[in-house]
Image (cartoon, rainbow, N blue to C red; front, side, top):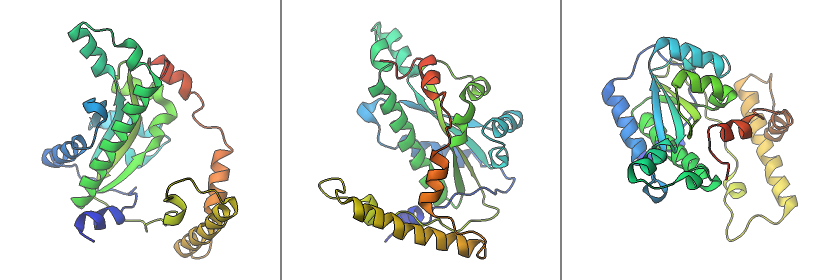
Length: 249
């Protein structure tokens, strides 16, 4: 156990921030930490947009699902899968890169690159005593987000990250048991064991909610997931991604 591991294991989402902006030094450190993440073939296929303009933050808070902590935080980052830079590279070098940068493979590379950078940023922020919350709601209305952030073709805002000084902290949610997530040599073949592990996790999650709410709530994880997944959400994504010339080959 060391300070890095303690920081990682102590993660929880923060949705209540003090109204206090980050310093430029803090922002610079968080972004530099993001840039230190691994990147496939040195492509660095992502960009980070820091949103500080109050009006833009208010608009984003509305379009991502009326989440007030998108507007009230120390700094709001939007992590984008970005292949526009590589289209420009093709122009500069007089090379036709259209097919590769519009392929599913490079789309996946860009999303992975953005995700790796974001997790480095999150760990850096939390190591500085700050709180973070990922905002997947950025994908609720990508056309609106695109207009607010003025992103070009080949750039996909993947998620946001609210960062700031925590005004209050939630308890850490229990994760799936290690033996369910980590498998050796092959995927879990015993379906009955697989379900048993999920039932055991259900008991842990139900206990967490019961303690947190004084017995008013005993949700299970599988119940939550089934309820969420039976509802169609963001079904426009395939068409939108193709519209901005990504993942079409």
